[in-house]
Image 1 (cartoon, rainbow, N blue to C red):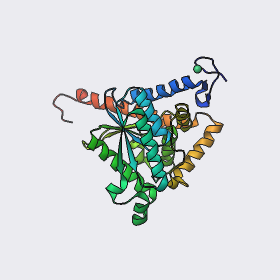
Image 2 (tube, rainbow, N blue to C red):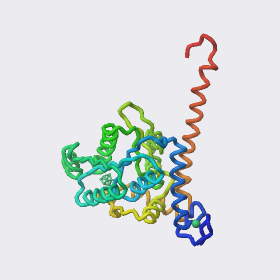
Image 3 (cartoon, rainbow, N blue to C red):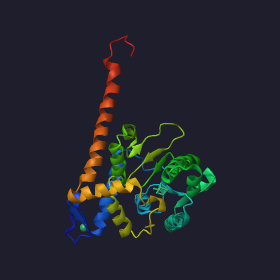
Image 4 (cartoon, rainbow, N blue to C red):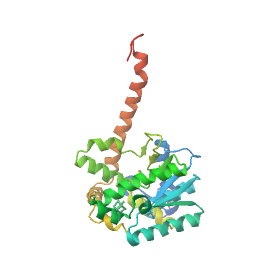
Length: 284
Ligand code: Q46
Ligand code: ZN
């Protein structure tokens, strides 16, 4: 296998792109995909400070690494969920990453805000763990962005995460969830930060390869509550499809996003042309 760019020996084959890359050209490809996502969805400007939500995993630390390397002004935010050794280890990975790169890392403890760590919240409220955790994370991410003065929060959701979420919504016909599935969610209230997902064009395999090639020390273990999660089952189904039909995951997600982009365009045109087409004196 040869690198598509330089003809040297390839380190990685990307079947869905029908391409292979050597290490430096894969890193270049990866960063270009992130740049494309930021540009296409106008996620943020070059001088806008960005709060990066980091969990200690390959995706969020990989994202932070790209943004630092591209010269963005960033700070990390780690939410300490209080999930046994998993939280301690993942926090240590984030602290080491930030210290090695001279970056600011804000740490928020869920127990401090909610009154107890996530396993205890689940026990007391009897809510499914991931539902209580997800709700706390969304709330605290936004609160931290407001408190520290960031208008935009970036998360490490990748193509696999986004395709699995879409799959779940379609499987259950949760049509009300579809408009919220976007790589860039605008602020809909003065107290809500924008949320962006600059890795949505990159698969989990690609983010793992990037983290490996960049020698990022990340936590490999999953959260203990992830076992048996339906999102993992959906990812497995999509991966099986991907094996027999490279690009299936990409086409599933991007087909959906493109339709929405078209709808947005048509909506924009409608809204902008309506007043001028109205008859004089007509009140709409
Ligand atoms: S929601 Fe659930 Fe995750 Fe929270 S409890 Fe663990 S698995 S960390 S992405
Ligand atoms: Zn090359």
